[in-house]
Image (tube, rainbow, N blue to C red):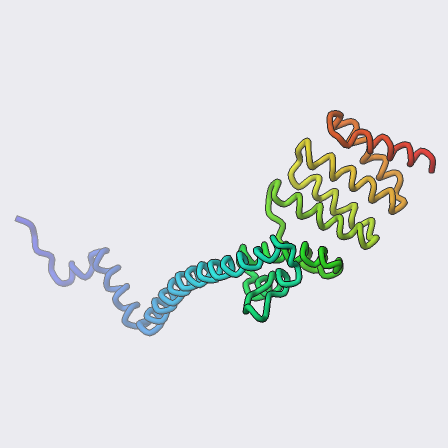
Length: 227
């Protein structure tokens, strides 16, 4: 037959001591504990709410983007960029401003840059590209090459060369890498940095002997030799 514990023995039991200690703490700090619990609930609710809000924002931005893309596909760059007031449509500019944290908003920045370039506004195109978050991998190479060409058209040869170099390294492969290395070499040549231009031309010839940029690289080396 098990022995019944006395009140004194029960209260001296380790488990009961811990329970009593916790109960006393809860009683003493009840307001603080309730506040902390409420705070946790608010945080969890905020995360769920933000996730829902982000999803709704992305969906709305994608819908608006598809309309602007229709103007873009028709080479109507003005309405693609700024929207059509009569039709109450958004353009890439407003989509990028109103939905900055969405994927659609980021894509809109790139479209806005190309549309601005097509409208002969290179300065505006560069502003959009500076805000554009370049995607990882091969998808980001074209955007960086485009940005380099924008600098090139402004006569900013050093910035162009550095951007082409970044594009060359962004996703190294046998197609886009030698092309961007040559672009960088030519930009450095225009910037009178003949040593760097020659180094990159040699890199194309040595590392990518089967590329279609070999002829241009050799021609560039010949031009540098006459300097």
